[in-house]
Length: 427
Ligand code: GLU
Image 1 (tube, rainbow, N blue to C red):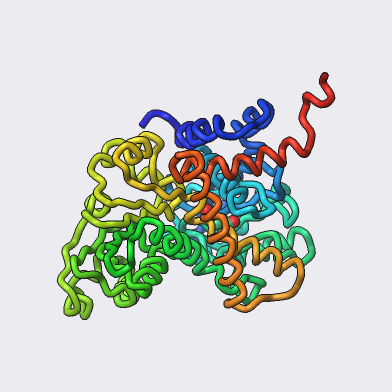
Image 2: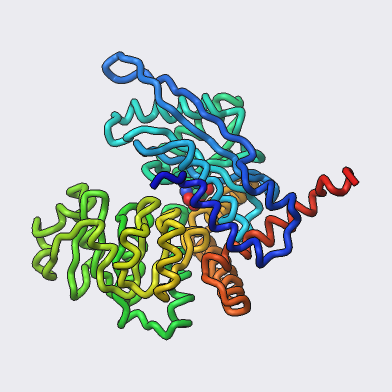
């Protein structure tokens, strides 16, 4: 695909614009990121050599509050990708009515090729490079693909050293002992689970008669697979970057998770031990998983997985986007024409940033909540906003994605207008 990811991402907005009364200023403003930073991060490697890594932080829009969004470590990270992810965060925060704008960060690196010490030096170096761009009232990072609480802890510490004051609210997704929130680690999966549970009855789809395939077995995909199977759904296929496994009669997800942890890959699960005794498996590729004959397909890995090339072959009736941007806009069109319901990333995976918001609130108030309280508040928010977006699909006969953008755009437009427009003083 020659078109940039960001150009494709912005296309989602165009469909929603005509449904919302917006000033021209709002439309013009939302076409561009507020600020983008590209940095070089020199890192002393364990062998004594110096290596320079490329890092990014994009603050897309801060009208509704300080910007918020994760930091991704991946060899394919680019300014185009980070900008798209920051754009999606802006809408995600608006859809969930969090008092935040959107941002994203990343480093072009394969973190699996670094030692733990190198990873720590890189993470601290990144914060040194972007410290003036972030802050508890300015821009608040969090984990994303291949970053985790340990890295957030180093980053918070580095920022606190620079500022000469403990600053837990500068970053979320921290270890619990450094001010992290209970329930943050499972929040993305839990949020998606509440959305599935809320929407499926509207299609008369009951868990026991619903088969599910999950692409991506990281923090979000693995926990969601487990929550769904506990609730009675039949999870028949899962995969990670190395490939996947399929069992017509359903997988035993807790065993798959245990084996993945011990053997570092879903494929290693296959016939390496007891899981094989429980059910018959087939090994499949990520591409094959996407086109399986299942009721629900859950892309929970990276963007651009469902494209114009494979969209005609998708057999699932419902797609829940747990990854950010897994469906291209062309593919979206094809799925819509084929009557496949796509539930969009900016709603489905918003549980993560919602509990990040709770973490930030706890850091600032100094009062810490129980896991039950966190999950209860998360559930309430997810269900409330899912209901609102569903209502828009009914009132305006639009897809869930367009409805979610209409919903987010209304809130953003209102805030942009409330701050005053150029027309007010330029006559
Ligand atoms: N990286 C996550 C996302 O894409 C979470 C962001 C956050 O917690 O700020 O939504």
